[in-house]
Length: 191
Image: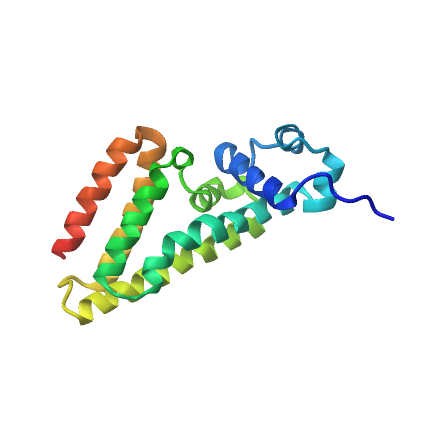
């Protein structure tokens, strides 16, 4: 008969997500995970699989618990209103202490050859979710005369700025990032 787990897998997955988010895939070893999570390597392999598997599960946990709630306003598809509310959520999320590490999805894509291929594919799909929702809202905003600019140009410019904002948060801190978000939001309102 198998012994019951001596830990909560959901709590350990969340903790691992933060370790990967802060340290990155390449810099995080199974030994480090074992030490920081307080569980032995055998338990990690048994419960979560290989380091690649654990990373992918952590990335999906990030998606479900942090990324999807961030997208909620965009899912309402109210055009400009949804976009502005998304940036309120974005600002609040990246202003938190873990925001200093950027976005786990973006970090995964930036890691390129240092992250498992399956994680890169998964991260690209997650960015695709944001792209579709922003695209829909910019098109709705144009149809409702909330913006005068080309929705495709607005989408591409906004996605580029989201990446720049994440990088600003990581390298220059929350105050400059917040100033840049405010500036971007003022510009979006003028489109």
